[in-house]
Amino acid sequence: MKKAILATKVGMTQIFNEDGVLTPVTVLQAGPCVVTQVKTEENDGYNSVQVGFGEIRKKLVNKTQAGLFEKAGMPTKTVEKRGNKIDYFSAGRFLREFRFENAADYAVAQEIKADIFSAGDKIDATAISKGKGFQGAIRRYGQSRGPMAHGSKYHRHAGSNGSASDPSKVFKGKRMPGQMGSKRITTQNLEIVRVDSDKNLILVKGAVPGPRKSLVTIKETVKA
Image (tube, rainbow, N blue to C red):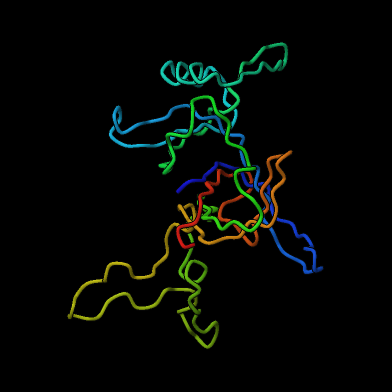
């Protein structure tokens, strides 16, 4: 892997390409990410690049991270709210490591922006899916319901769970009611339709997991 970036999901829209074909796209606010640390095999046992993304208040950062951010020269800003001045780090809310093949080419305090990708690139998008809470088997797995009349007492139940005295148990993985959503999902081999380097926007063809404003990790696809 040579390219990756952190982004937030803005939402979905649609655009027309040069041939006039309508394409649904997901808009991602990608970066800018700041390189906070470069790990080497000599010092850490492996090669990777740690990047920061998203604003965070200084008071929420511990001393170790604050020292790391200041060493990286991370930009800060001060916002006045209700007469109080609040200091922010510009890219410290999320910290992630990427094991780039060319990790040695990166330097601390370097910015990674959306222009590392271009139209036509294939990517993998990873995010936490939208949580649906506790759901029954019909909504969770699309199972069919039972009769709704004529004295039936079986409507939206999942059905029989066991198999009599043999094997006398419910097999692991049986589809039953439970927590739906809120899981880490990776959608592979998505295509980038357009990149706006001025606004750090990436338009990806189709849907990307996660609700709006959620963190999305974009990596160079492994299926190319």
